[in-house]
Amino acid sequence: MNTSFFKKKIEYSFDKYADKYDSRTILQKEIMFTLLNFLYKEISETNNKKKSQLLDLGCGTGELSSILIKKLNFNKIHLLDLSLQMLNIAKKKINKKNVLFDRNDFDSFYQFDDYNMIVSNMALHWSANFLVFIERILNKMRKNTIFIFSIPDNKSFSFLKKVKLEELINEFPEKEIILKKINEEFECKVYEQTFFEETFSLLDFFKNMKKIGANVSNRPIDVRKLLKLRKYCFKKPIKINYNINFFIIKK
Ligand SMILES: C[S@@+](CC[C@H](N)C(=O)[O-])C[C@H]1O[C@@H](n2cnc3c(N)ncnc32)[C@H](O)[C@@H]1O
Image (cartoon, rainbow, N blue to C red):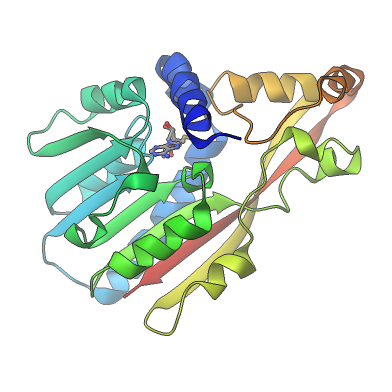
């Protein structure tokens, strides 16, 4: 798919549902708190009291940064997202001077060496080319930087694979392939955790994804497969799995 068209679709979709995002995202918040716990653990181990420079990639409504700002000391805070409406919500939440709210594409961002804490929750899988992106950030990371992010992998949504509807969801970067990009210059830990969303119907599952702006496909969709969704209704809710990798990369 044409990259600029894909980006436009992402921007439009997250813009459209931005004002509902916070009230409709339980799972994303659960993943965010898990990520925060990993981050706090790392920080307490290094016990560094110096002020930090924070970059939040695909910050959305700024939930992660707003919690971090209350807990840690920063002399520079940069929230970056493709969606202006998501950033507008973040602005209202983080009513603080010296915060940069930047409508920008992380795929064309280069100044990673201005920060020593780079965070991202459930956003980097939207990259047009994740492996190129990760190489760029690793090349630019300066010493004493922590880069922490959560990202779903291809073990997610196994029910959809079982019923041969996997092409309705995007492909996610594989842990092993990401790890190959991280050389001995870095210290890297990966934690894998599964989260579940319950649903009575597959159609509802996709509708709920749409209602938070996240139903943007990066591959052509066969309409017959979409129609097939309607037949999957259940008397008892089924559990859809999100297999999430938490990467903690330090230089
Ligand atoms: C699922 S939301 C996650 C938001 C937030 N990090 C959270 O934890 O709730 C994904 C966010 O990534 C943003 N995004 C997607 N592609 C992007 C890109 N190429 N550059 C910057 N932001 C992007 C979207 O606009 C959206 O706000």
